[in-house]
Image 1 (cartoon, rainbow, N blue to C red):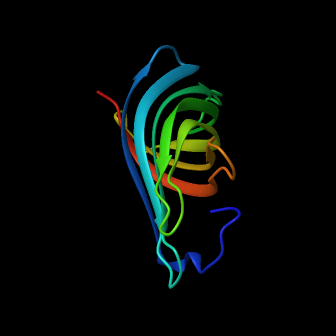
Image 2 (cartoon, rainbow, N blue to C red):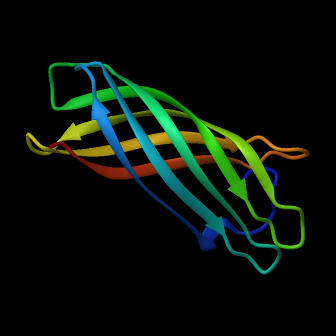
Length: 134
């Protein structure tokens, strides 16, 4: 987490989502994500529920780069301090790799922030995931 101190080696992040592919270029999803850092000092976590929109860049190969943005709500309880909650947003860039007709491997970067009074929890994440297409 930006603006925090401590060792990020005791961190965990995960999420789940459901989405819809509108066209070859445009898709969206609704996601709930969690990230936590556990240190000898104050622990901090961020949970967000976001609606995201992605622009896929077809290449005619098994690799499809994408750009995305999302908005929603986030909350970040902080040990020994005031909880933070409010408007949350994310910016994404990455690529998906076709593993089969119905399964993609996704590797990407995400910036995520929760806007609240005072300091806003912000994260830079490198994420991997699987996308199953019905």
